Image (cartoon, rainbow, N blue to C red; front, side):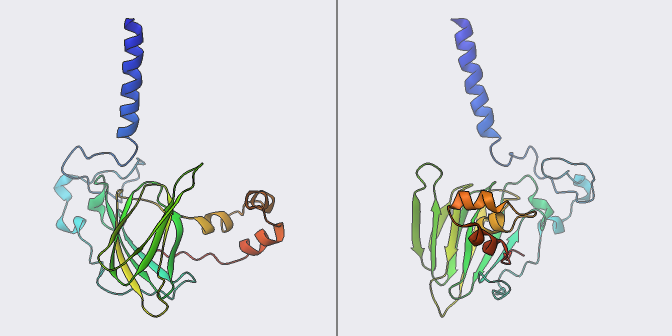
Length: 226
């Protein structure tokens, strides 16, 4: 009986430990400013000596009030991500920020953030947004957002934003629950990988002819982050 309780306790502790490490770890000190000059490889960044930390380590003149160029790619959007690579003071704090500009009929195409949940608010214009749940349901949840509206995209799920207005641009701000949320744009990853995925594999996966896959792989898959 005692051994059964021990096994149960071990299983519960293992589950709790897994949940605790499933996202960015909680800081164990006030801050851990990233030392970008260190050659030590860790999950995240090595801490700078606190005696050398300055206010500038937590600051970036990002000019997020300024419109971005949405004509730089075919999808008609521009994502300005402010993460730990831009502000060293974000290291271990589990948060980052992005401004997203959308041209008329522009979109932030289907993508995932493997390490973060995203909460987005519309600053200007209208956005049609949505995400798809995991297998086997693949339920599609969508909503049209107006200025001031907020929407949440759960961690790891494929999601998008589209500006349905053919005349006016749109702007949104997103907060993400990781210092380095990552982004996997589905079309880029599947059809623009280096080296390319075999067209036999993709033709079977998408149930299309190989020449369709070859045509898709020949396209230039734009990256809309800066």
